[in-house]
Amino acid sequence: MANSITARPLVSLAMPESGAARLATQIFLAVSGTLLLTLSAKTKVVLGPVDMSLQTLAIFLIAAAFGMRLAVATLLLYMAQGAMGFPVFQSTPEKGIGIAYMLGSTGGYLAGFVAMAAIVGWAADRGWDRSPFKMFGAVLTAEVVMMAMGFAWLATLIGVEKSWQFGVVPFIVPDLIKVALASTLAPAVWALLPKR
Image (cartoon, rainbow, N blue to C red; front, side, top):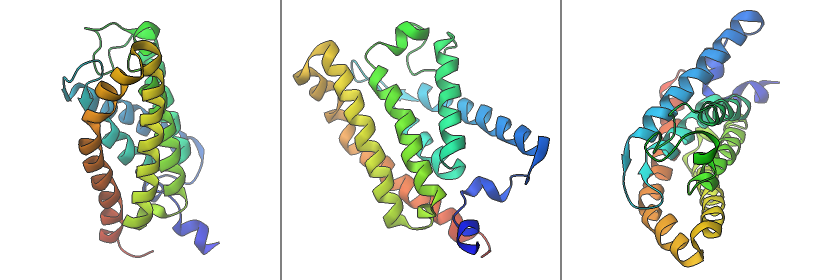
């Protein structure tokens, strides 16, 4: 019993135990998460077919704080907002909106974002977010899965060589920095909290 209590994600410390207040808090957190994702998407550096943003770092942190279920729900809400034509994605509305944009060059990465949230959230649900080493393993795995999904989709659109050149190589060093940041931030927050 004690082990299951200590393995809850950060957000559980402020979450009401049950009822309407809990549901309202979860909805508020999910909507707030989509706003953070939108802001992080708009903070970008133009590189080519796929631009660099702070979005992966935001996803890592949301998943570490929210746990798997709420993080995946947040990402799915974000995808739904984008599919409905809201300009929440990195290059919307200038490069299109809605489903058409989602099926473009960033489509695989967008799907990979949901996988990232699931992997890092799963790790947080098991208390890995308290250890920088375990968290690094989870976040790095999530990053590799997302990049593989993005590369595979982009390769179908522009070919393997260009996909590697424009969709993977420019992101290796910046994304490793984001992985390292996310892997240390969540354990640092836990270390600052009083022991429970």
